[in-house]
Image 1: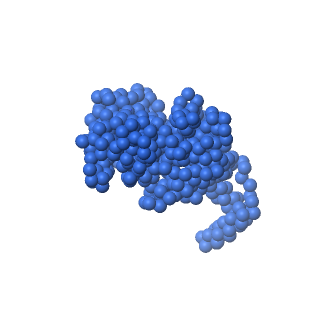
Image 2 (image 1 turned 90 degrees about the vertical axis):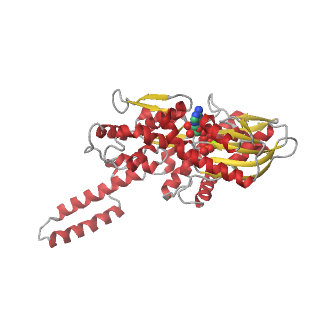
Image 3 (image 1 turned 120 degrees about the vertical axis):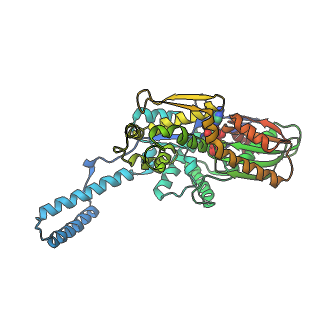
Amino acid sequence: MKLGIDFGTSNSAAAAVIDGQVVPVRFGEALQFRTTVYFPEVMRDPDDFELTSALEHQVAELIESGRRDANAAGRSRTPQELRRDAIRVVRRQWMEQQVREPRSSAALLQNAVYGDEALDAYFLENEGNLVQSPKSMLGYNLHPRARQTITGIATHILEHIRLTASRQFQVNVRTATLGRPVQFRSSIGDAGNAQAMEILESAAIAAGFDAVDFLEEPSAAAMHYHAGSRERHDTVVVDIGGGTTDVAHASIGGDGAPQIHRAWGIPRGGTDIDLALSLAAYMPLFGRGITRVPTHHYVEAAMVQDMTRQRDFRQHRYQDVDAPFDKRLQALQDTGNTARLYRGVERCKIALSSAPSHRELLDFIERDLQVEVESTALVEAASTYLRELQELLAEVRADIGREPASVFLTGGMSRAGYIQRQVAAAFPGARLVQGDPSFGVVQGLALSAAS
Ligand SMILES: Nc1ncnc2c1ncn2[C@@H]1O[C@H](COP(=O)(O)OP(=O)(O)OP(=O)(O)O)[C@@H](O)[C@H]1O
Ligand SMILES: [Mg+2]
């Protein structure tokens, strides 16, 4: 049995074809889980410090330079004093290194928790690491250790999926088709796509798959749409998720095989609207635009997917910022609070798709602190993304050179009316078909895996 796996920025799901029917994999009660991982941090105790021969060598070098400095300054230092100071320096460096570099990624990930339970575990434990949307880091310029950690996280997620599916289907699942965006989110241009696929492939092998192949997510959604379409016709499939927006042009329906003509994609999605909304509507409560705290601090705090930025944010000192922003920023630095704030921002984005305003209590920051956001703020926050979407769809329309008969819309963001309207406006002559927002891609992946 070959599995279809949708490893999404925000949500992951899997399915397989059994007796001609697509059967979703169940994760507890649900058919998908949030692509979030929590792992308790492994840190060395200062008491574990031991002078290895390598550290002893550093101590000897520090004693020597300390002696030279003392001589140059005309001071006299006893050998005991020089040695004590040298050990203090080496020990401090050792501790800093242990905090930066946990023992090994494998040890770190042994106690990992996935999905919504990851957030709960993080809030409960109040320490450790929360990794949200690891997919959005796959195409980034990664330090070798960070790459190892990300690969380990992807491995655990894929293993979780493989084992859950194997239990449910009562066979040892060993092959899969994985979805991939047309363009991964990347900080290294096109090389990001190759790196992301390499990481996913090695993670899949480490997770116990013998082999995996990849299918572009909008092409998968087209396969799904094809399976339910009686009439052969020309369609444009639009999949708008948390991290990427993907489009495919295909001939589907009827008795023939689906034909994918071309795919397009931009590394932008729902999380970009979240970021803009957070900066515009939430961060002013923390002094953005009011204090002299640099804007990039607020970006670091808002980008919960980016482990490096999150760490940088927690290292700033805010005791000299004007009240009340000093205390609020310090509270935001407390464990779990950027994740709590982000959860609220996403809820706010979803609520404002259909309500004129949204109010949220931020009592984890300050007693009775509230944020009240009007839908005009969402319109403003979504404007950059909507412009990029409009440009992408105009390019697609120009490349195809004619109006498709239908536009098939899927992905979590396609639940929002403003997204539906924007897509419909780009193809005014086409029939808009509202697909299943959450499972269009994974069903197509399962069909493709089975064929
Ligand atoms: N009702 C809603 N209104 C607006 N946005 C929504 C709604 N429901 C979900 N979303 C957004 O949809 C996005 C998640 O969509 P989806 O599950 O398709 O993404 P994904 O497949 O994990 O990501 P990707 O395909 O980009 O890797 C999130 O940004 C979420 O906030
Ligand atoms: Mg998706």
